[in-house]
Amino acid sequence: MATPGIKIKSEWILALALFSLFFGAGNLILPPQLGMRSGVSWWQTGIGFSVSAVVIPMLGILAHARLQGDMFDFSRKVSAGFSLGYCYIVYAISIALPAPRTASVTHEMGIAPFFDSPALLTSLVYFSLVFLLVLNRSRIVPLIGKWLTPAILIVLIILIGSITLTGEGIIAPTLLDNPFSEGLLEGYQTFDAIGAVVVGGVILISLKREMPDLDATQRFRYISRAGWLAGLGLLVLYAGLILSGALMGDALNDGLSRTEVLRQMSARALGYNGNLFLSLLIALACFTTAVGIVTGTADFVQSRFGNSKFVYRVTALVCCVLGVLMGQFPVDYIIAVALPALMFIYPLTIVLILLNALPPDWTTPRVFRAVVFTTLFFTIPDFLGSIGWPQLSQELESWWPLQSYQLGWVLPAVAAFFLFRATEKPPLNTTAV
Image 1: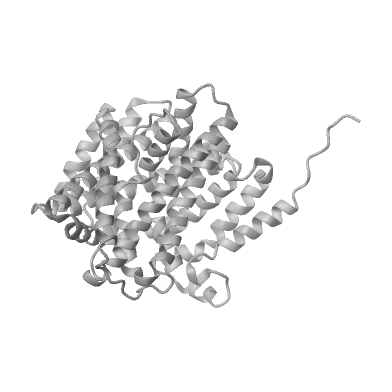
Image 2: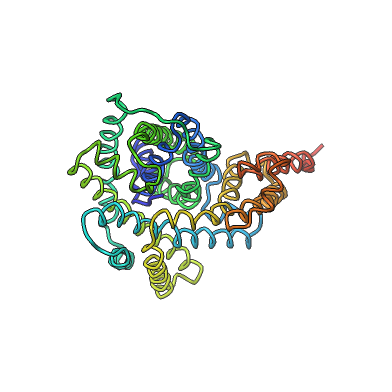
């Protein structure tokens, strides 16, 4: 999840902006290890990963285009209080997990391999710079972001091509019990569905400002076409990285962390100088992502307290202090800590995206509330299992559909939608006779 500046001039420019928004440096470290562990089942995990890391986020952008609103409007049909609480939870998760993870990725990819420096020092310097740029609203970050994505793409295309086109790799047997579901759950760690809810409103505001002549229908079509172009780019890139990881599986140790897998793949495919260059690009991309997350969070909290500059500064400081404390931990530790939060918030975010993507007359407030609260209730077993209390989930696995895949909430949510949709009273006929 990344947040560079957005300047919309055409559908292709908007597609590239969307691609940049979703393709953060954290996304890079997930597919290679997933592919390595998937082995011959790489295509199954690739499909699962793409559902949660590509299809759902793109539907989130389309949902915003249909809604023509901001993040607060995304769950307003449940209630205003629920919507406000959801916004605060999303921003809290963003500053507590993906933002510190950028510092950890920077240390493991760009500092630790080349310098004998403690992670705490990296995190302290990193978020001190983040805080300075957030306070000064520097134009450096959008400028860096403008050139980073094309540069990273070029290097990754070379990396993927050098691994997949040589024909030297041997794909090992899979190490995963459920390749599709494990790929789907790993896609949660991109935070891109949450990113779609957060940045979709930003895209819409930018489009209204730069193309004021477009009406709501034209904006929807414009964003839809750009969204699927961006989604296609993400799909191809993720598939390439997962396949590359699978092809390198026989040459890599299963005990390697996510960053170590990417680093070793890069070193083998690009050599020392290429690996150093990719590490630098990833560090810069992480930094722009962190600045974007902290700025967005500070903006939101400030908007709830009368646009006070003091509140903005205090919020930014709290975000950065939390970033220093969490960012000193290894990437895989932060990913493990993130799992309970994601098992709680991601199913809710997915159903909100799907409900907002549907025609408005299909999703009345009553339907919204039924689906949302049903989803929350049936995520409890997975949430408890993720924090070390798997008993309830294990008891349900033998008879509850999809529970063994940690997707027990899916069918109840679908059932709630169709049940409450079928029992919805038709609108009164007010046409004059």
